[in-house]
Image 1 (cartoon, rainbow, N blue to C red):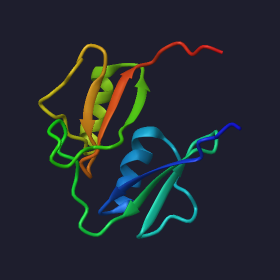
Image 2 (cartoon, one colour):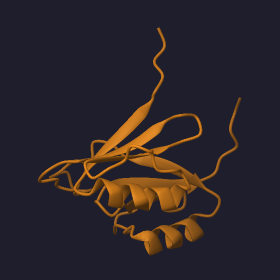
Image 3 (cartoon, helix red, strand yellow):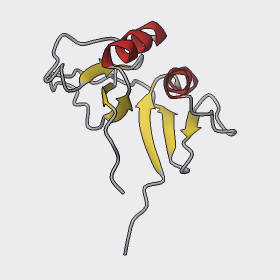
Image 4 (cartoon, one colour):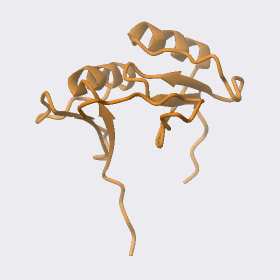
Length: 125
């Protein structure tokens, strides 16, 4: 038996706003059935990145674990500095703790979820 990942969903206070951030950052289109309680982006391979409204959402407190991240997204980029500047302009924040700043950067999306950007790697077949 083989599992195929079809979706990753993030809890947040405002699904459409968070979907807009990631749509602008990734260039992925908004799912046609997005609305106030759930919004999604669809990758070319069909993977859905979803954002669901949760009342009383508390953002992760990374790197402290009072409210653990539990999940984070990783993205590859051509230029770490340029990507960080663009993502900050879109509303991302840069936490003070950077475990390996030369290898990857940790950022926080507008809802407080940590995500990483790293230099693009050659893909193996």
